Length: 217
Image 1 (cartoon, rainbow, N blue to C red):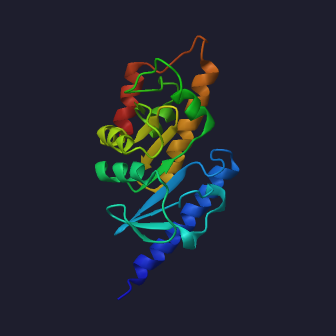
Image 2: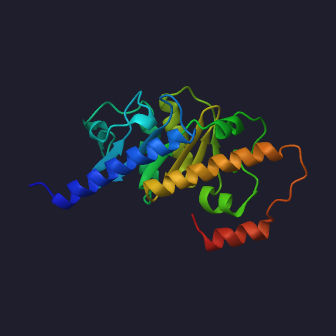
Image 3: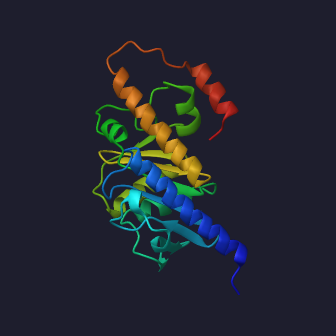
């Protein structure tokens, strides 16, 4: 028997995924068919389909996957669905995942000599609060199964991950939270590039520790 409440909630999440995908695309944070979004359901998850543009998603054609990442209904999922599955599998609090190829984040992912355990210096309070300690995963070709394992190894300790020469993957308790965090990540990447080579006043370790105490990730 159809659970009306579950069906209504899924319809709402489909519309929210489409709306936020369009918002990311319209503001230049996604382009072409790059990037993918997913949101957790009680018995699986919804995801943007393969080769789809985040600005032109159809709520009725979203990929519906079971808890193991197998397609149940809708169009075929992104070839990067394993990134999302890795985050869901390692983070009990994960309600949604966003993966983008946003310009400034990708630029930072190409820099040499950045700390793989914490890519960003503590530039702003909101970077510490929303992005947290950003991990860098080494480069693998898109769709490579080894990338799934590399993400899985760091996902339990980091809800924000940067794929080298590729882009960010961010988990959140909700789709809105994940989108907010990836937007903060992109803005912090832009600030990092703007400040490169300049004398910069960063938050000190005590200030960072206080933020982490008040706003645990």
